[in-house]
Image (cartoon, protein in one colour):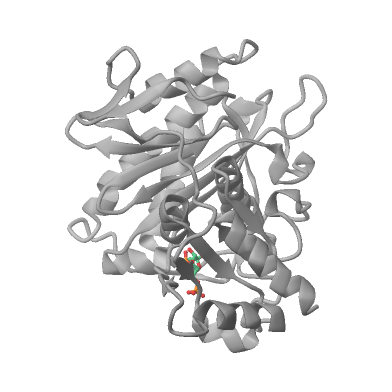
Length: 345
Ligand code: AFP
């Protein structure tokens, strides 16, 4: 789906007719280029943006409204759940519970897919990580919502089901909402990657990063180096390659929020790594709602995302909380990482 013609002028984002390029306008202009589109995906994306505005507002007030800290429970991953994890998940569920836009909702915070009663004939399955980087939420760090919109194969008239999602290639849209100094909405529907910034004064996401391109290589790498001794040899060799000699210009940037580190690579080049380790023999990050959506965004921006041995988007789905090793960012950096893995297997 080709992106609508848009330009970013000095006074901000404008359409070619000089009007402000809002997310709504951008999505609808993209839809017009799809003659068979019925508008459901457009409304689904705008509903995600609405949930992002709600969450952005709550995050900014979280300390004031006593929303910080743990709930005392653990999620299906066995991870301690934060109050903001629950709020983020509830916000997404509430945004889609009475809509006919999705047939099922998959979330990091829910053991099983949530079937949406009104979505019996919906074409899409929505997979989300409502709060990526929750370990940052109590320390005013960057967090994000990651989303992947899947259109699984299905019988005519039947509801789309998670069971029929084959891989990340079944996505028709993906992106993230990053809650940092500003709130960004970055998405793709297969026609490039486009970034919007929330103007809190008017409550609109405005185009600030049209047609984002991931540099083929870059100076930054992000990884939890406390685990490096548990990585396989190829991954360890790659880190030694990155840090060998003083003339290397590589700099470590690891924020604790996958999206923040990927967003940096998307804009300035670099690589993010979470290889398998002793605590996570199959990798830590989840395929359906973390790695595959970000892989779609990166590939659409000219970047790459790999498990180390295969493209993330080609990795078959086996379960909704399936984990994979993850190396993603600039395509040249990912290719070098894959070469180290291949040569030392
Ligand atoms: P949380 O959402 O539980 O904080 O996990 C965040 C994350 O999935 C990803 O966003 C980070 O890059 C990575 O895990 C951090 O993992 P480590 O704490 O093991 O480095």
